[in-house]
Image (cartoon, rainbow, N blue to C red; front, side):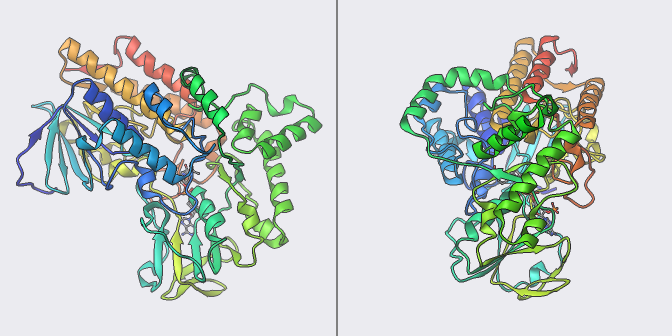
Length: 536
Ligand code: N01
């Protein structure tokens, strides 16, 4: 651990991260009168949207959902231009909010936390940074994000490559010119798919190295017209209230209709409509796609059929069809003419399942079948998700116990918000909450508000520290595990279950019961007089 020569600064609250969770936390606690310091590794606000500037980067949640609801002024003043906003517009929105609330003055940018250590005698968190800062505060909120630690592919020879390497998760700020270039892309998750559909239309040649094909559905994005925006703004308050009651934390309708409750021809009509409608309409069409394997299989067959209809070359079409894991068990991607891109003569699919990558060479990528020369190599190989950011530095709780020790077998917490043994440490969008399965801005707002209530309760009762009891944490983890057991989500190899990182404990540790239920649990934890916590 780095020793600092700077004197320690005592503040009221430390917030780590300037993504949507951290930005709201800084605002909320400042409003409550706390002296708040935010720490952020990036050069400005925006979190994942600050870093992910690759061509085609876009959110697959509707812009009206993927925005703050805590301030009616802000939602009335800001106008979204598209149904699904692109990265520049989302980053502009984050900047707009930061300007509007004057958030930047509370953040230290380009600063990384190197350790966070609980001092039991003083009842404070002592946080050190790579700039030598030492901050002390009774409370610390980790808004470090579920997808903030990039992961390179585990392939030999990366350092050898003489061309340019670009990473989706840390994309350069300047525009990259792909014209006439031979480009290789590794990874076909949400990021890779978005890159293919853009770079495939710009590059001289694009070689897409696909290991596991992802399921992707048409986004059918469109501009929002003035009348729609006006109507939406009129209904924002009711919409935000409804989002709190929705399992997705968004406005997507939910249904109680199981797949097999309809006769076959009607099922087909509903699937066709969902495909034409675009977005995540499938998930709103049937209630049991993540619990009934047979229903899931039929939707999977339907989508495979569509891929076959779109892609001209039958061998490429076959390789693009996902098999062996349920549809929606990996994060379903939304695309704009992704499959159509493979009909372009300069776009080539390299199927790593039949022809695995052997190594990266000076000049390109060598698979078992031979070497392909490349000028540019793009990694869209995902993240050490959910737990990566919090395990990237030392977090030391009561009695010197580290988070690495506590999470040796996988993440454990109460509600994804707090952990036994780590008093006064909170996280937003923590790994045992609904994290990646619901609207992350809705979860962040819920979590920050919950933390605010807890600290208000402590102030009014003169309590210095709070942590959940081990029994409460065990009970929550049992609820999480029992729900996970019933869900098809655990049946695919993904960052959701940790199988994408070598040596990481695997298992579905997110709460799959829906955002609305999660909120109920959070409410109950406060309502029963904080019986699940021990205080000092
Ligand atoms: O990462 P991923 P992502 N050789 O982990 C492949 C959110 N997001 O950045 O599956 C060959 O999904 C790997 O292959 P495999 C969203 O929540 C949202 O794309 O391990 N391939 C996989 O194909 C999303 O789920 C949006 O076989 C290798 C890919 O890399 C999450 O971020 C946009 C490899 C990684 O896919 C993460 O998505 C972007 C190797 N050695 C992201 N190593 C939107 O809102 C890895 N891969 C639209």
